[in-house]
Amino acid sequence: MSSVEQLLRAPLSELTDRYLVRAQAVPTGLLAALEADCRQGARLLARRIRSRQEKNRAEGQRLRHLLRYETELWEQGLERVAGVDEAGMAPLAGPVVAAAAILPRSYRLKGLDDSKKILDAERREELAILIKKDAVAWAVGIAEVEEIDRLNIYHAGLLAMRRAVLALGLTPDYALVDARKIPECPCPQRGIVHGDELSMSIAAASILAKTTRDRMMAELDARYPGYGLAAHKGYPTPQHVQALRAKGVLPIHRRSFGPVREALGEPPAQAELFPPAPPVNPP
Image (tube, rainbow, N blue to C red; front, side):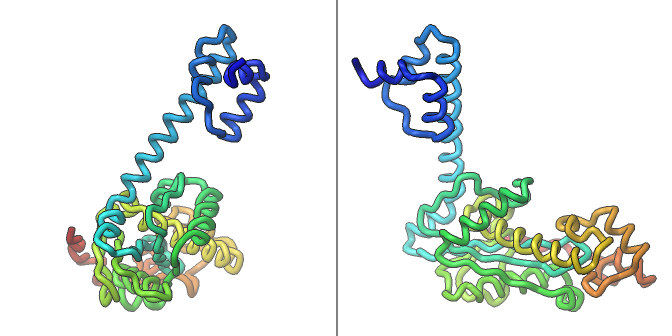
């Protein structure tokens, strides 16, 4: 009796546990045998296994595509490629946080994607733990509210990015940056528009930046209850603006931002009356 014939004698629940739950390698010939089996449950199991295999192949192709910028640099002998991204540009309160991450060559982390597309905060935290464990080096950089108000949010974001790169503890051979170029960057760099969707290193940095800032905002929420700061992670929420007007401006609010100035009874900042043209991101 062949090994496949022996497997077919096992309960379907056992085969489901082996090849779907525990994702063991499927022996050659087992799928064809399940598909030819007279039992409806066996044929359903075969379809589920094939579906899983197709999803795994698609994820593998996606991750290979996500490494195309890194692979091009690795092939040039540039081993330490840092991805850099930030989080917290739009909210009315709290710092802007950037992260830099250098991943091992040919690194692949299933499910890694732009942090804004991963809606489950728990999954983001799981990925952040894995990235920190596996990375050659990683670091965060922060620009505080006072710096945001003094420099403007765009330049404060660049400052946070530069601080993240400098905090790595080693100088990268090259940096891939989401959409921008970092002033006084210690290594060559390339700005990639939508880089957090196109580069695995930038996607990793995006995860680290967002999870770090989310934890900071949760701590501020405990210190300043009633403003909904734990939910004030992306763009300003109507609830936060309402609380701002009702409860007043906190030390952690960005006074250069329109809704905060309005709550203070101040006119719009000059930059808001005449906003600068958006920067052009070089290829």
